[in-house]
Image (cartoon, rainbow, N blue to C red; front, side, top):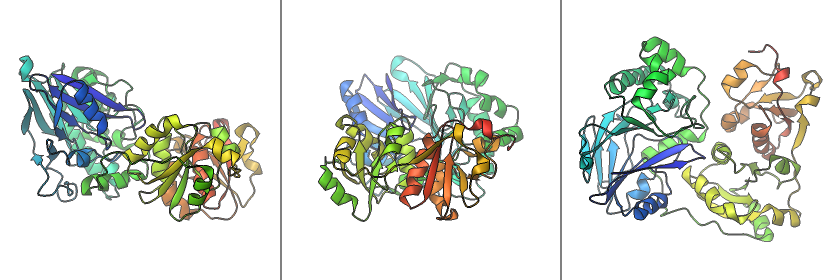
Length: 472
């Protein structure tokens, strides 16, 4: 049997290629939209992808199932258990799809894949037991858990309410998740590997581990959420719903895209190189957004093209910023440090459904052409006095709710930067705003969005926790 995890650091997302080396067939579980990555892995290991399975309708990236459906050799395996609201709508009568119920199985060569219904994170969620009959096994080697169980945590049950807007879904989902954990994980042998859908840095949980996999036995002993589930439903529900980070605003769009469908592109669209003249011409066109991807925040704050969204190509910042402030209808002009990052930047944007690329240029060309005429006003926290803030100014806390509740500047308005787009109408366009986070990084991203809408924003740089006082 062949097993390979394909991990996306920016999204902290894991897909899996499972193959039977005796027959040369392979399955991909939870692929992202740029499916060429999985084909390359399969070819390099003399395998042919014949099937794709999904654990659930994802919220944090565009699934590659729609792209794979165009391959006549591929059969899709999708959950049939989402009810009226969360059943797949995009497959047609011509789509090669098998809808799975609890405990149904299929084979990839001599490898058995058995579906287990594990609702709670979402109603339709499936996990997949993997049994290697070709190797002589009659018990599962692993379980691909999607967003059901992670290393060190379990899937968050609040997203249907906090991201998709389904009021009243949070607590019932948490109770369903508790039941799934007790009835689905407990019977499994300790030696079964847990292959999760996400790792540390994902917004699909609050305490995810940074190692790629675990075992059922290890998680029973050391996974705090799983251990709490064994003590009863009420304490589990209270704890699992507390302190969950605000999901980026694009999660709602991803849920609907993955349920209802998205255009097939056949790969990441090309992003042409532009000279400064072409860039300036396109920048003045309706529907065009400038995305400055330079990792150096100080450099962006010192000079950038007016109305640029700051989406630094570092960690998860590019997808979180772009996903929070851009829409699928925007045509994107990218400002890069150099050409070497074009492929990965466009891939990251494509994975969250942003695929209209007007072109790219380097900051050096922008600077030479005299187009970088805007700057971000900054003040070091060490030199900032909340008492000196003018009466018509607003202090804006763009951190998470949990961070804000632990302590914040007196009188601060709280608006997490990943949700700022939907809150912007609450902010008066008059007066000055002082935006802060824990370092200035998120505040600078938020300030770029607000400045593009005409707001007067100052970024507070550095750690100001010493000024928070007892404000929790």
